[in-house]
Every structure is written in C-alpha cells, then in structure tokens.
Length: 391
Length: 101
Image 1 (cartoon, one colour):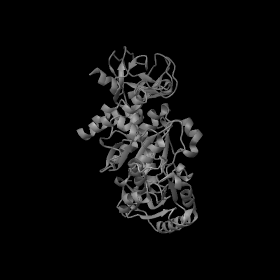
Image 2 (cartoon, chains in turn brown, orange):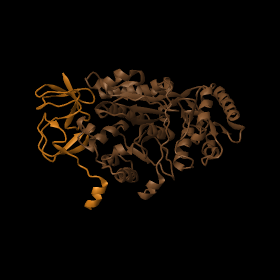
Image 3 (cartoon, helix red, strand yellow):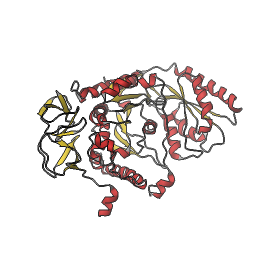
Image 4 (cartoon, one colour):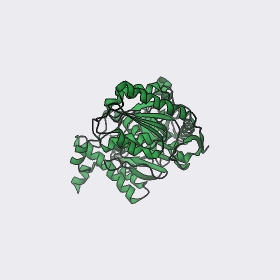
C-alpha cells in the first residue's frame, strides 16, 4: 500500500479533495461570501480577522490556502476599499493554473448582484470539478500535518507516540510531515537540533525556539512553566512535557524550519520532516500548516476535540479510552487500546497509517462528514516582534 | 494485571496506565507490546506517573522517550515513584543561561 488515489492539479500538485474556496480578503465581505459558498456544493468560505491591512503574514496564509492541492477552484470575494485586495491574492494564486474568479461588491453591482455572480462562477466550477477523476500517485505526494489540542496524560503516553509511528512510516514512503507549536518544543531544542540534517537547520531550530521563549518572557511567563494540572497528571519536567508533544512528529531527521515572517513563508522543498514557526493555538496552527501545503491532518486530543478544517480532512486520535467512549461520534481512532496492553503502540501506529491512506483515497473523516470547516488565520504583532528584535 | 509502558528501549522509567498500589505486580510493556519486566512498585503510583525500572544514582539522567527528561536529585530505587520530589529539570530558560554567561 504505497499509493493513493488523488487529483492532479495544473501545477503538478496532487489533491485528495476538490474544494471550491471562497476567500473574503477582509471580514467586511465575509457574510455575503459565506452565503455564496452555502449555495454551491463543495464550496467553503474563509476570511481573516486581523483588520484592514495587507500584512504579509495574513496574505501568505490566504494565498497558501488557495494554493493547497485540495483546492480545485477559487473565488475571490472582496468588498472593494480594503487594503488587502483581490489583486494581491490573485497575484499569488494565478500561476497555479486553477480556475479563479474575482468579484468586488463595490464594483460589481452591489451585494445581491455580486452574490449572484459569485454563485454562477462557483456553479460553473462545481460542474467542471465533477468531471475530475482520481488517479494513482505514490505516497511521496502526501504532506501530513500533525497537531495536538486538549491534551491530557494519555496524549504523550499513547496518541502522540502512535501518530509518531505513522509519521515515521509516511516519511519512509517518501512523504512529508510538518509539525508546529514551537512553544511545545521548549526544553527539547538540543534533542531536535541533534536530528537536524545540517548545522544551518540545527541553528534555525535553536533560533525558532529561543524566539518563542523571548515572547513568553516578554509576557512574564517562565518558559519552564508547568501547570499544576501537568504536574498532578504525572509530568515531571518541561523536557518531559515537550517530548510528549513533539513525539507526534515521529523520530526522523529534521529537514528544515519553515519560517513564517513578513519576508518569507516557507513550504517544504523536499520530502521529510519539517518544523513550522507557527503557533500553539490549535486551529490557527492547523490552518497555517495546511497553508504550507499539508493535504491532511492528524490531530491528537486527550480530552476530545470537534475540529475539522476548511480544505483538509482532519483525522482525530485520542489516547483516552473514556474520551473515545464519550466522543466516538467525532474521534476517528482510539489509541487508548495501548493502556490495557490489548494493542501495542506500533500496531495503533499502523492503524493510523492505514487510515491516512483511506482518507487520502476519499474516505471522509468524522469531522468532515459532520461538515466542520474550522479556519483561523494566525498573525503576529509586528510591533512586538520589532521590540523583541525579531525583525 | 496492571500495566506500565516503556516508550523507548533506552528508557529507565515506565509510565503506569492505571493507579497502582505498593507491592502490586505491574507488567511493563515495550512500545512493541512485549512484556519486558514484572515490576513491583515500592509505593502507590497514580495513573500517568512514572515508575523506576532500575536503581538510579543521584545525578543520573532520567530517560523517557529515549531522551533525558531530567536528572535524579537523590538516589531512586527500582520500583519507586519518579516525579518532582526526586527529579530536577536539566535546563534553564535562555534568559538565565545568558545571565550565567
């Protein structure tokens, strides 16, 4: 099983879904954009809530989402007077060769007429997309994002190590894995740096985590901070807590840090394992990794989470058997079978890997079947980063 | 029988997957699911907490996930509960490292 069925895009990337993406570059046009998307099968509308500015970090994430291989067609749906214009997004998207339409409410006859134009454009794209056929591709075309949220004592014990087994396996098949949340790497930088493929990558890893420590320190938080809940749950040191988190990325060599600044938004340039300079807030973290090209997400949660994503299927895994019992309607994999010894971590990892391939082939994740389309763009304060000497 | 999991072959601690009582027999499993040891906790240990798989000297690294998660701040006997009372973090935040230079 080293192949999957996907859709080839004009730019050569391979998608596992055919989403039509409606981008409202500013929240001012998001309400009509959502109604336009709701009218057409397979369409989803997204926006950002960081104000009227053409901040490169926001632009890069919106463009990255449109460039994601799971997106088959794009409708840019702007208001007209915003700083982050449809044209800026078009410039970053047009070379994908995807079907793209641009509509501006203030120039295209007002709200209702522009909504009508938008629905007609999406309707045409939906008809075209219906003719696309899945073809066979090697697993090396897959990029998986791994994320955790709502962690408990079982996350580092069962779910994260099991996802790590699947991540290792995907990389052995020539695929790519991204993990983020630099805050949860604190205390493990020397271990991650040891796995770096070059000295440059090792120094990037130190730099990324040190910047995160400085942000915490500026907020008055000791980077060794452990909550009472962490300690009561059995976590002894920050190294142990962070190791439990980074284990979901597996054990392979680290190819690079995907920087996310006002000057650059890095994508993986060859297969293997990458760290992203992102956020520990789970939905924006996922959004950000999907913008860097991940077609799929493995999301571990000890307490349980409902999360899906606008354009990427999210496979949810819990290590807590009670949570699986309570939230089985929205958690795909129970890794808690390792706790009573009925299944090994390795075996759960194999199940997760099989699920990754099935979902790539078209099987809907539970969140996907329920229609959950989480999407939050992550931004940093440029002023704060300047004051910290980060840019 | 209650279980504990050793997450990496190099680990000198295992995590118990249920509350275990002093003297109770605990089966330690590898990540491959093999029984590697029958351990006897010398004190009660709560779910999610760690059990020493062998005697550890003061200053010795505590290994979990195949990596050092800290050092023993006092000698730890096999079967003992391993936590903040007998382990110290091996790291300082960058700010303190800089202050030390």
